Each structure stands twice: as C-alpha cells, then as structure tokens.
Length: 410
Image (tube, rainbow, N blue to C red; front, side, top):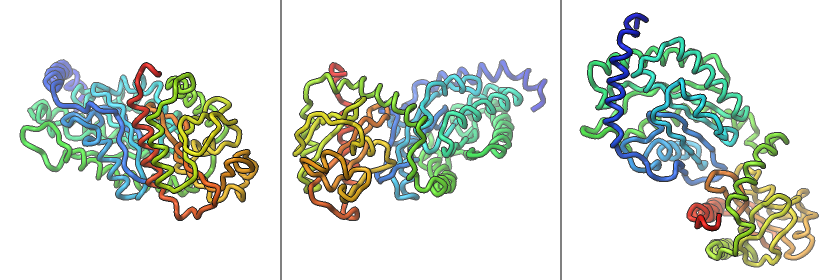
C-alpha cells in the first residue's frame, strides 16, 4: 500500500475498527483462571501472550480456547504434560506491547507464543513503525527468557475471516496484514530461538458465531506441529533438563517464590484440615508409611499436613522438598541411603528412617513452586513402580485447594 494512500485511509480505518471493536465487546469471553493443563509428567511450560487468538473471544473457558487446545495438542504429540498460561490483551498494538510485557516472569517458560498484529492491520500501522517496535519486542522476549526458551510469533490471520470485519474495508486491513506478516517473517528468520508461524483463517467457520472451540482447536493443532521440533531440540540440547539452574537464576526465582509463600500466609495461620484428606489419600494410594504436604520457607520447611511424620518444621538445607521444587517433574529417590544427596539427611539416618521418597512440586496460584506433595517409606522401592501421574494428580488437588483458600488466611 502506497504511503500517501495509507495516510488518507488511516482516519476512516481507525474509526471503522473502533466501531466494530465496540460491537464485539459483548461477545462471550473466558471467565476462568487464565491457565490450562493437560495430564502427564515432566510438563512443558508455555506462555501465550497477546491479542486476537490469545483473548479467547467466542468461548467462556480458556480450556476451550487456545490455551486448553494447545495443551492437549502438545501432550498428544509429546506424551508429556503441558502447563499453558495466557496473558490476554485484546486491544494490544505493537506500540503497547513492550509495556504489556513489563513485569511478566518469562524465565519460567519453555516456550512463549506471541499473538499480535490484528489491531495494527486494522489501524494501518506503518511498516517502519512495525519493524522497529517488533524488533524491540523480540529483543525483550529473548533477553528476559531463559536462553533455551523457544519463542513463536503467530502471524496475523485474515481480517475478513472475522464476521464483524467482513466488509470492503476488511480487504484493506487484510492487504496491510499480509505486508506486516512479511516483515515479521523476515525478522524472525534472522533471530535464534524465534519461529514465525503463519495463521490461516479458521477452516470451519460457524454461521452466526464469532469463533468456536473448533476454531481454537484447529489453530492449536497447527501451532503444536510447528512447536514440537524446536521444543524437542531444546530438550536434547539441555540433556532433558537434568542440569540445575545457574546460581543467579535460582536466586532470582527464589525471591518470587518466597513472596508467594508469604502472601499465602501459611506460617502464621491455623492448621488447615482440608490438606489432611489429600495427604491421607496419597499415603493410602501409594501404600507408604508416611505422606506430607510440605512448604519451603526461608530457612525451614514446614509440615503443613502429614501422616506418619511428626516434626512440624525441619531445616531446609539438603531437604527433599528443596530438591523437588527445582526438579522439572517429580523427584523419585528409590533408596535414600545410597543417594549421595540424601544419605546423611537426619530423616534418613534417624526417624522415620526414610529410604524411598517420591514428591511432586506444588505451585501457588500465581505459579511459583512453594513446596511438594510427597510420600516416603523406610523400605526402598523400584523407581519403575512409582505412578508418577497419580502423584501429579494429588499435587494438583493441593493446588486447587490453594486457589480456593479463604482470603482471610492470606
């Protein structure tokens, strides 16, 4: 589009886009927690950030929108779990994207999916401004995420595929969107860890519906197919993520983790018996002598609910829970006496003489790992006999209780 023509059309396009956007404000939108999960161990952690497909317009749950659909699509291909968080910003433009990214904890994710540009296509954002601002956004994503994280930039889908914009001016926005996509593809091709993913119109439009769960499922399948090769290469390069994080990264995460523990107010609150039933269920399900939900504080770990474990608090140094919250998935110790990390632990050398241990990290409602749901026994066990998926489901039960925790206790 020639620059003079673009300038002439800008006022008309922006007025039209604003009017259409107001019409869309009454659409169904997800009302639940902006997070979706699919079953499996050693989960991939994904962030979806932006407008358009990220906002989930047309459905009432993120589980039916892109997060849930993407989580299930990834698990179907990897046989691992998937945790997908979403930060929807329906009115985001390339000019506001940097400010929206400020404060997000990008270092906790294995992959980041960015959806932006639909508003810029309708507003006829200049190509030069798009290129300059997008370069800054991609630079921030690279700098603020871990060096192994994969970043996927989703292209602008055809504007006229949205019923409210299926008019003559929608064709103008479509042409401009294609021009912006070309710039995006060129930039992504020059940067490591960043992949451009073109996004077509939904293949199964539903008359009278803005967007349906089927539309999000189609996009998620396409996105998952593009995400899997870089994610698998990342795991191979990282040695299946066995290496512990560097010291600066641990310290940076620890401050947020401790803030989450303080906010939950566990240490100053009365015992909460609803955790007892989950711990009892874990002890019975695994047939162990003991089970516990343990929260890691500054220099201590607190036994919040337990069966067969007497101490209310324990030192944090070399604690099983401390190691568990740093693990990518469940921590299973078949025999602690033969394990260099734990053989001298006071609970191994003395009561309750732990030999077998299995724990799964428990996250706060804001996503920080605050502790673990664990089972242990004085008799060693084979690692192959541990039902890791069951352990994960029990940990998720604790997390659901944390979400519903009365505010008076926080």
